[in-house]
Length: 126
Image: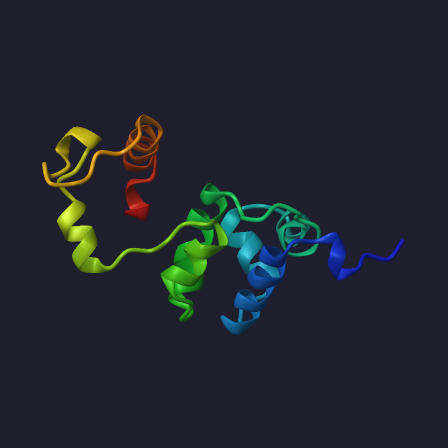
């Protein structure tokens, strides 16, 4: 059976278009991931979820940004919003929710736990 565009997600198509814009072949991306081309091609051709895994995007981020694709465009593939360099410097001292300034509105417990998880597990995204 022939695959149609409905067999993959929008994020797969965005990944493919960014790869082409960067002038990269599937083989080059697969080599950067240290995976077979068929493994990488699944992300472009049959991946059905709304966002790519953060870990996957982290691995290909340096390659794509070195070819002129913005960090924001890449992080958007994983559903992560980029922050400015100034914001990053302002947040660099924050290691947990307790480190937030006192004038920051109180967040729901789930939001604080999510912020702690992001800060502790995705240091290079912030």
